[in-house]
Length: 298
Ligand SMILES: [Zn+2]
Image 1 (tube, helix red, strand yellow):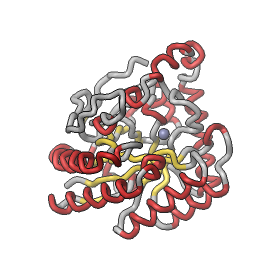
Image 2: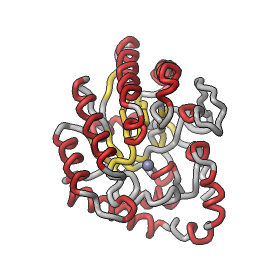
Image 3: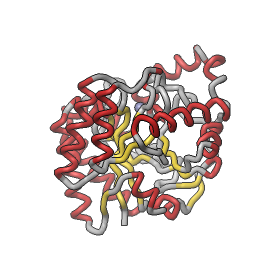
């Protein structure tokens, strides 16, 4: 049996249009008896969370949605490590930008510095949202070995940013344009024990990035193929979305959710939960039966 988790990144960042995306997506999922895990930036671009953000996030929490930690400031794409795939296929310039500022950026990646950032984020969650986060997702998938030790020391045991498939970005103008199933073999396709004993819960794919609405049918077909394959491979499957991707085309986002829900029901025996629910039930620990590869250079 596979449990699917809807995750949406970048809550807390942006103005009223993004706040509205959170509210509309919550209400929509509630009509399907579903709940979402929001990855929230607690100190967006180094500014305090706006009151309208606090309001919508508290409202989501009270309706049973899950709030987890997405970095501290998300000020650039190198907060917890150097640029990584597939963010580099969304925006190849990350590689040059990192190379230009390498000496300065490398100083960020000490256990002490990263632990302080994580703990500041946890304190903001507790104070402003009344929530103690248990799962972390580094912005832009940019990670480092010191980040995992920092998470352990801060008491966070679960991380989720490694992709099984990045084919949801192939529609972008500088990519292949081919929307087809393409999975990496570089990581296990199920939760695994990784650096510092942290459990990494891999992301299946993203089907709602900006611009995919123009090829909605193809992305829905891709999602259905990925769903069919992941139920053979893992007891947990994480689907990634972004606030700005949802707001880019609400119709596509809602169609995608309904298509995945129908497909999961057709395969029978599978279901949906939030990250918080899986953590509390011990389901991520029991799912992590394999060890991850030593792939990080830093
Ligand atoms: Zn993000």
